[in-house]
Picture: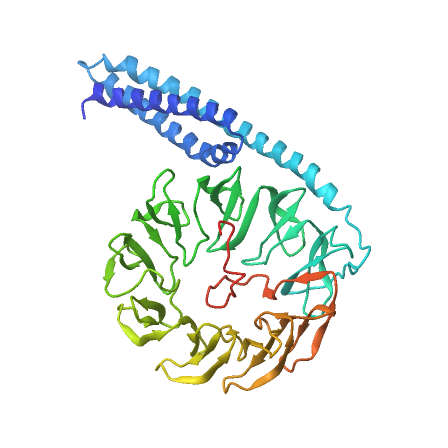
Length: 482
């Protein structure tokens, strides 16, 4: 490269980065959350300007050694001076961004944490028990009139191991849980302290190291430091599965998949998608023509034929519930071929080798992977098997509905006497009896945590567990967009 041209490059790069830095400063003052973004990039910018400074010195030496190209000397000197100025300016800018973040966090902490610690253990809220634990369930306590909700977490003995000092809270995954205080959501660890301070209007669980959050009606994604990996500019988005998340491009009907860096790895060329499961996602190409297919993590597309858009959401144990127009529901494998004929009114996911299917409305049983009906369709409704038992619903002669649990022979091991219930998780199941309230039973049907009125619980989960659609129930699969 000619010596004068090398000097020009040094000068122009310095000028371009100067303009970029001025724009970043303006953005930081307009939108305060971008201070977090600037705090992350100021160090690389310092290194860039040091490189420009060194390049400018090299350029000066090269020009000085030349007898004919002294015209590049001025450019090299200007580039060197600009790089020195920018090293100082960017460093100051980064320090200022850190101060903005620190003052913002301190303000939030003063506003939220102090008030949250005022919650007492009055009424039906049990006293806090300081003990170690690795499995918890959300516990929501109400006054008798249904007001004054206080939310904490209990362990499998029923002890309150994270104080009920929150307005609302959700399940732990990957060591963190969304919690609400003074109308804003943040994230707590198992100590019950906020590690991501409450500044969101809504917040979803962590999955694949990222969480979906809402700010001013817009959705975005954060990492475990609370930094945005995708700014809250989205109208539609759902949580990450298998490291990828469906994202609609704002202002369009186009949807694709981003990875946990916030970059599109499957271009937004589809009209609709379901989330990834077992390496594949269901995608809609053309609504009018009903063109659908499967896409893998590399973006390779396979069109499906004779499959309806009302098909299931995700693969489980290698099979996906799928509909065939004018016929019914069955199951396809990962090649897109039906391996269980579409003869059912409804079809749920496979779990522990069995899947719940309906032969007509409110008449359900279970099939195996060969399509054999192994548990007769005598239930009003039923859930996938979990830990060896399945939650089923029956309807008596008076029309009253009751829930119980069956084994894989179809026999009741816990009689249907509950007004409401959820599937087993971590060895316990949440149930509610009329006039008794919610409690937890073991697999013998005996109460481990006695039922109480004016209390609501979630299912038990490991604090550091990883979210898995195949193990989640219907309520847990709902994210904040839905």
